[in-house]
Length: 222
Ligand code: C5P
Image 1 (cartoon, rainbow, N blue to C red):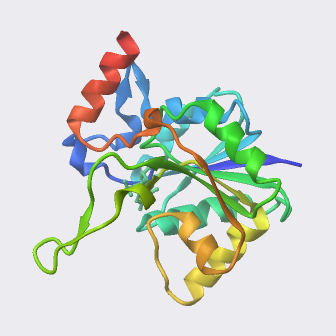
Image 2: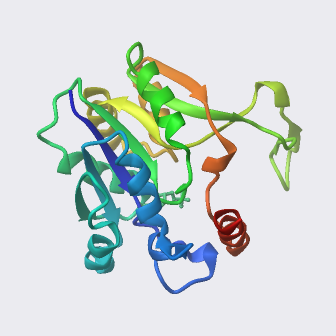
């Protein structure tokens, strides 16, 4: 059985306030996409990276020699389209092969979480890492404000693990009905696949703002 990954890095990362695509921004001198690809290489034989269409060459250089067979493809307009392109690049995989879908924006997710996800995949079609929410969350901001009960809330992270057959089918069905979600677990659940959860890790937090980058830089050097 093959274990592969789709690593999304085709977003502009404009909230970071840099000119370079986020995946090429460095922490400790190493591009974020390389941090993420190197950890994935601990459990994956193949990795498909989705890059901004005008930066494919730079991403090829950034992930060269990470220790797995890596291919860089141009991403789509939105995240879900980028993941779909990654799935297409893994067309030769079998339905029961394992795929981790990960975001380069979460470069420091510990490898132990990948292991938890792949173990849980033995009894599920899809598995997501979930982290307990520490903030109190409301909906309807600016209108009908409602408090949500915190004990039942979780923040969903990546990578998320899928049987290739389930991931392909969920994406094809979402595309057919033009349904869009912010992660792939939502698609798996919508189309009736067995969705499991494992504990996430705060070190897998998304790098979104300049402050997140500064904090990561301090952690690496300290
Ligand atoms: O924008 P957001 O934080 O949801 O992006 C999550 C991940 O999806 C990032 O790693 C980003 O590079 C990726 N992405 C992509 N293609 C897009 C938009 C986002 O691969 N069109």
